[in-house]
Length: 423
Image: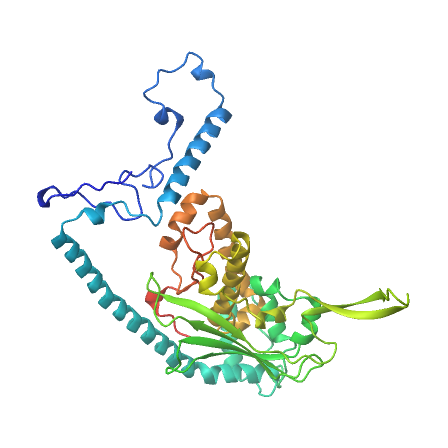
């Protein structure tokens, strides 16, 4: 499939990329899948060929497609021989282009850093509005007539049948009960994490805040802070979740997640919501006496969010010490964790009232519907074009060595980096 024949100056053909065969198979070139007649077109058709059932034909087609895909997977990471066959002076030009690319990467790093600084700037400008929101939610401040009027105009714009509130009603400070618990439950991803046991603790959640790491931090990133009133479950007043980016942007020119760090929750006695306790009987082998033992086992809980999955060490990956299935499971957990952090940063915190009222569900469900339709497409096509179609702001790096399988390295988020979306 590869060629090592030197190519003269005047006979240089269009380059075949490294890691691909010189003659691309139709599926790799984005063409239609090979059909049975294409594979055996030089063979005289059998008399009963027209009687071949569609199931048999599709089965042969699937088998051939599997062979083609298998051959392509074997070629990933291997040289086609084209670059090695170039004359020395051409190879130097290739290396020079890599040098130019280094300068481009440096500018892209600078660009992303400046975008991050712009986000910080507008977060500071919005802080008074966030503080005002918290005051209204807690009932420590009274809503103004102007604020109510602006809110009603927004409601009418969304729903022409909306009935305005009576104008003569007295306006008094009134706390909104379980505001943040309701908002979090109206996020599709977070709703799956919150158990009924968690709800008793999350009723004490008074605010969720976003902040960015200082500019002089070793790594860029952001922090989500959950503020709680005194409760019967833990001593902490604040539970933080910090997301770190790698220092340099990734291959697509976007930030790459490095890892996440959560607060160590100081649970009160017998109140750890991340564990279930059960009483077991134990019998002494020598005396035959029995005793009751209380044992804890991990259980599903929203508060596991503060004990994020840990990426595997590089040496374990290099030495293939991690089972493929375990690695896939870990990558799914990492991707979900990063996605929830990004959604809190980009959606829930800026638009908390929309999540409280449920307005956001309409848009989140549209995103879910889009995902369902994507699943109907050919899986190979989806994997091949996934990175190409993504407009994500942040990459989730694949932890694999060698060709990825499935969607382990898919990027997350829903922000176009070119827009430098502001907080």
